[in-house]
Image 1 (cartoon, one colour):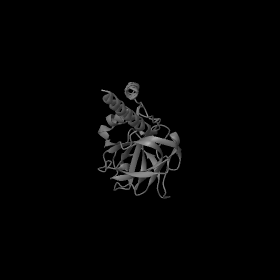
Image 2 (image 1 turned 135 degrees about the horizontal axis):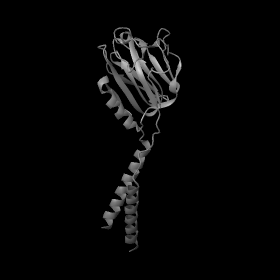
Image 3 (image 1 turned 90 degrees about the vertical axis):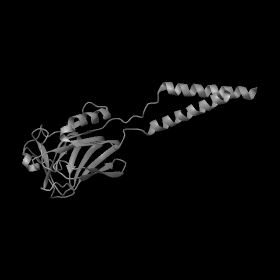
Image 4 (image 1 turned 90 degrees about the horizontal axis):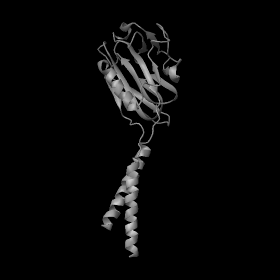
Length: 236
């Protein structure tokens, strides 16, 4: 019986330490990429927000407020400390209400922003973010390179976003560490122009997974009992 108590105590101690170690390294799960047709956007967006544990993003740029037709947004400071730029001096981005400019794809509301195809667009943030979403219109598959605040980076593929010309795609990410910039690489929709709308982003505190207090107390109690039993056996 004493051996059972001792073994059980050690087992729970192992589980406890494993849980604490896991908790220390677990933040927001990276790898969640919401990428759906427009018709599914609202429910998927709600699931994305639910996973983030927030009601609404810190910042939403929907081009419906504070913008007008043909406003240039490239290399300008936008809400939330966002700047959209490009390595190419030929690239541009401007607000439009003309859906024909983006292959007939529909903005979310009246306005969206045009992006010129075949160029890279960099979304840079004044302070690190760990979630990001936008509505991408009229492009074939492209890549987005994520540059983290710690100097590392990785590239994620985005599938076709309304290349038929009549719809877009809601694309959203959750990251497990701070992001300093994201780069849309070499947009290609076949007609020279693509579009973005409803850019949403922000930061949430990444807290460790809590270890239930009852589990801790049970583990410590059993360990104490097993150690006491072992000491009694040795004295006897």
